[in-house]
Image (cartoon, rainbow, N blue to C red; front, side, top):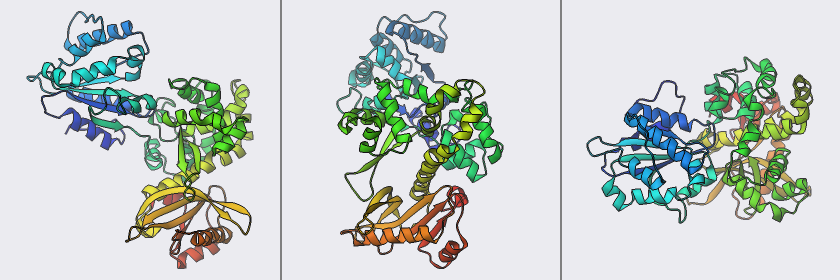
Length: 492
């Protein structure tokens, strides 16, 4: 096992999988695919593997086929210590030479093609050429190359191995490098105060680059420094985070009608999570949004979460926090923010929006994440199988009640049971009234056919604390669980 570089934070699983793949001793060439959203450290990972085992790393750029071939030929010559670069007329020649970099005498060799979508954009036949090189004939002629294709265009990388794509069924490794979750992100930033960690995460999420290159290691000193940190790094026209959200859209090759995509993301950031709500915000028909929503899903910018209690309903949410912050806080104030000196006034008048449109929804999502991955079976009353949000109709009150999270599990006989329901309030002290609301929802769910809510536990999440009355109830009733910020970040 090649040791992970000391400068690499977390990524133990990803490193181990890459090292295992690169060290496979078989005589044949193999294929691996590495994908993930931008700025997650994929290149850092792959470059680290190549440096550790002497592999060949080629970072493609957005260029014509001829220019890419010249760059590739020069890079391969440098790798082999040749004074003159290779002159490849076509990619079939380049692929053939690349697959012969390793021989039975040299043993396995890691070869990385980073930003692979750039190469295919100029040379669409490249996946087919790789398919041939990895086929029976190519394996006889080539050596034990451990080829790794890497890219950030999620829709492209997802289709690379799907359906009737040429490389379908060829990969020995399919590795997705995720963003750091909220607990790992807090450790990455070195933030111990859970309240500061959460508001910081609501803006930059778990993207490693935002904590290093983009801010030059500038971390808020404490909660009082959070606002000044926003002004220094996010609302500052001279810093890269200022335009990052716009660049994220511009870098996606499948986003062509950018005005529509900007509008959809703005609608979701403003609290419109259903297709009908998004359509109303944009003053369009809901049928006009199908393609745009699908593309945004495929690129990983939004997620579609099914309603826990209505199979045909779903809610759309923005997956990248920096996008939510941009569309909720920055985009409506863009003309002022571009003028130096105006950011403090914009930030001051945006506090209400920041709490309700950015931190509040993000807090709810983190509560669902905690229930899904960190809460113990003792807390939830059983082993969970899924955690979702949803709505429940209340005929008596003639309204619908929102359920911030619903935790499902399985009974011994295989039936699905509702282990727990929960409510999350970021800036509100929770009391007996919130518990009564959860009890009412549990009662409504118990009356639904097919729902088993008899033992459903009630979870209260708060970023502001709980009343003494509610604490007293929870102390004597194990079916009532109180989860504060400390428990979210350090407990189960």
